[in-house]
Structures are given as structure tokens and as C-alpha cells.
Length: 97
Image (cartoon, rainbow, N blue to C red; front, side):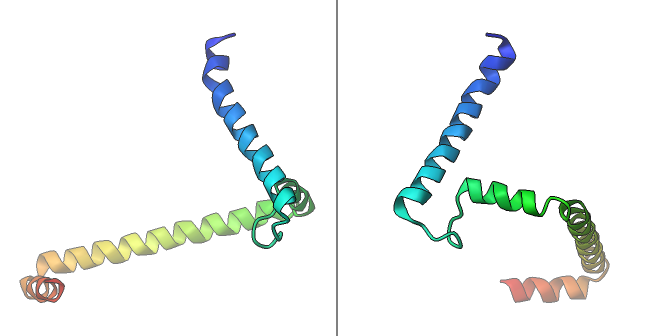
């Protein structure tokens, strides 16, 4: 076995085992699909919506990036305000203690 095989085989076996145990557990205990869907049901649903995923992923990534940008700008603005205004810094330090 190659070095790559020895490196990746144990995690692959573990992941496959977890998925098999999950599938068997859901079926054996009759767990409701809305609580814990079986991996096979997830795979089936993924196949049904695969055409919608690219646009939805793009929208989600755009919203996450914009949220990060807005949060960083607000945080940097508040930090600059606190740095330039000793009165604001003292007021906020007294509120937090």
C-alpha cells in the first residue's frame, strides 16, 4: 500500500462506517425523517435539487461575504471611534465592568 493509501484509508473507513451505522440506526429505530433523515434519503433529495444548488450556493456565498464585509466595517469603525474618543472609551469600559 502506498503512503497516500495508508494516510487516507482509515478516515475513509471511519466515514463509511459512520454512514452505514447512521443508515441502519435510522431504519432500525424508525426515527422520523424530519428528526434525522437517513443518508440514502439525503442523497435522493440532493439528486432532486441538484439543478438549483449552483445559484443558491452563489446567493448564499454572496450574502455571507457581504455580511462579513459589513461586520468588519462596523467593527473597524467602532474601534476607530473608541481609539479617537477617550470619553467614548471610558463610557464603554464603565458599562462593561
